[in-house]
Length: 113
Image (cartoon, rainbow, N blue to C red; front, side, top):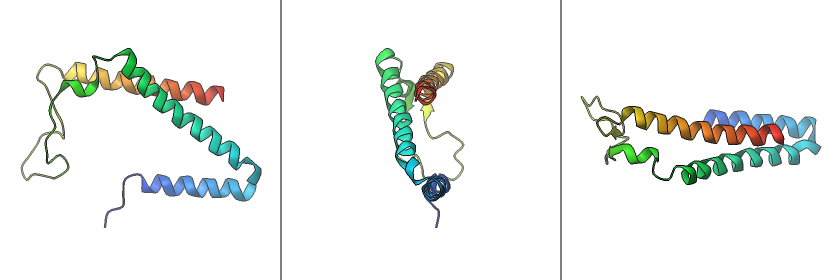
C-alpha cells in the first residue's frame, strides 16, 4: 500500500509540534498563528497573481486535460499535461511567475511576523 503524498512531512511536522508542546507549551499558540499567517499569505499571493495577470494563467497554455492523467499507459512517453505547440517557454515562465509571486508573498509575511 502506497502512502498518500507528503505523509512523511506531515509526520515530521507532528513530531516537531509535539516537541514544542513538551518543551514550551506556552508557544503552541504562537506557532499555530505563524503557520496560519504563512498559509494565508500563500493564498493571497495566488489570488494576487490571478488578479494581476488574468489573461496569462498557466493552464491557458495547455492543449487538453487527458482523462487518464495518473494512469500509466504502456509505451506512452508523454507528460501528464500537453502544452500547445510553440508555447512551452511561455507556459514555463507563467508557472515560474506564479511561484515567485506566491513565494515572495509568503516570505514577506514570514519575515514581517
